[in-house]
Length: 569
Image 1 (spheres, rainbow, N blue to C red):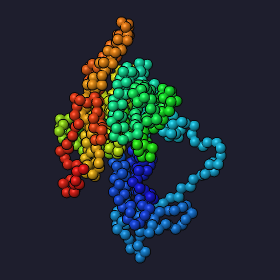
Image 2: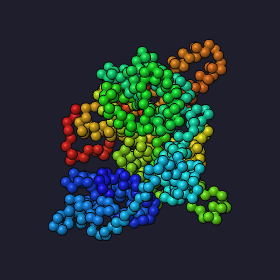
Image 3: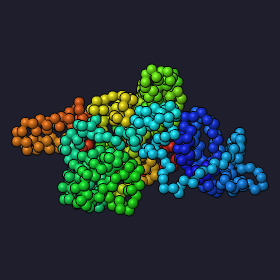
Image 4: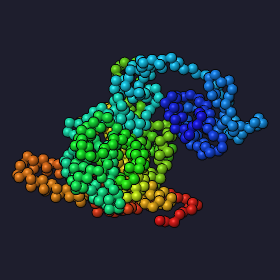
C-alpha cells in the first residue's frame, strides 16, 4: 500500500474482499514521504487494520517503508529513500522480523473493452449485487441479507438496520411511502398542523435573538424531513412573522431518499418561487462542509430533528456474568443443511445470535459517554448504544459553537433519560413486530438515549473549554413533548380553532383527537421527549422553563491532571 494516509480505504478493501474468511494476509504499508512527516499515521494504520484481524483472519502488518513494484514492466524495485545505501537496515526493517518476503504477482487487466460504447457492467441497478456473486440474484431484502451472511458471516444489528432502511434497491425509506395513515406510522406533524406551527414559533424566537446578535439571517437545517409537512408549517409561520423576508432564510434538508426529495420539492415549490433558497443534502456531513462556505458566515444555524435519531443504527450488547464482559448481539441466517432446506422450503430465515468473542463495535463502550453509565448501572444485562447519534450531536454542537452569531438545535423523539436496554423493533401498518420479520418492508426504530446526547454535548464543551474556544453549546435538560408544546401555546391555539368551528361536531371531535394524540401521557405527550441546544451567545430558549441549562459533570476527568489547563475565557 502506497500513500495510505489513515488507511480508511485499506480497511474498506479488506472488509469487502476478505471479510469473514479464514485467510492469512500479509500487508506492507509504505507511506509516501521519508522525512518523518507521516509517522503520526503509523498507529492509525495498525489500529484500523488491526480491527480486521478480529474477524478471524491472521493479519500481519509491516508498517514503514518497503520496496514496491511500480509497474508490470519495471524489473527494478522502486527505492523509498528511507533505506540506507550502505546495505544496513532501518529500524522499521526490524519491526516485524518474523515476516517473510511477500510473493509479488503481476496482475494484467484487459482494457480492450474500455473504448466500446456498449457497457461491460452487469445490468443490475444496485451495486451491492453482482450476477457472479450469488447463484441466484436475490429479489428481496431478506434473500439479499441471507446470501451475504452465508458468504461473510453475521451482521451487526447496526449494519442490518442500516441496510434494511437505506439500501438503494430494497431499502425501506428509499422505496415506499412510510408516513401518514396509509403508511406504517404517523408522526406529530402529520397529526395536526398545529405542531409544525408551534415549532415555527420556536424557530422565530430563536431567529430573533440571533439577528439581534448580528446575524444577517438564519440557516434552517432539518434532518430527515419526511414528506416536508413540518418544514412547510414552520416556513409558513416564520415567513409571516418575518414579513416574508425569504432572502434572510436559507434552508437545507438532509434526506437520503430520492423519492422523498421529489415530494419535498413539490411541497416547498411555492416558497422557492418567492425566492427561498433550498439545498438538499445526503448527510449531516454535507451540511457541515457546506457551512464552511463564505455565504454561510453571517447565517446562524438552526437544526431541527423530529423523529430522526430513532432511525439511526444501534448496536446491542449482552453482558456475560461468567466472563464479566459485554458481547455484541448480531443477526445471522439459520444454518441448515440442504435436506432441511428442502423440507422447510425456506433457507433465508434470520435469527439473533451472540458473538463468541469481542467485536470491533465493543470499543464504543469505552467512550466516556457510556463509561460512567455502565459503571453506575451494574445490574444491566443488555444495552443499546448509538454511536451515530453521539457523532451527530457533537457535530451539531460544534456547528452551533462555531457560529459567531448564535445557533440552536431542537431534537424531538421518543426515548428516555438514561441507557436503553432493549427497545429496537419493527413497525409495519401501525403495529410493532420483530426486526427480523420483514426486512426492507417495515420500519426499524429504537428509543433515543437523551442522557447520552446531553453528555455528548457537554463532553464537546469540555474539549472546547480546554482549547480556549470563545463560545459553548449550552444543553437544556430534556422535557416531555406535552410540557414543551404547552409553553409554546398549544392550548390557546386549539381553543382558537375551536371557536372557528362554530359548533361543527365532526370537526370538533377531530380537533379533540388531534390534541389528545399530541398531549396525553399515554400517547405522544410523555412518550416523546424534547432536547434543546443553544449557543452561549443566545442562551434563552422558549419551551424549556421546566428545564434548566444543564451542566453535566463527568466524574472521570476529560482532561488529565498532568495536562496544562488554559485560563477560562
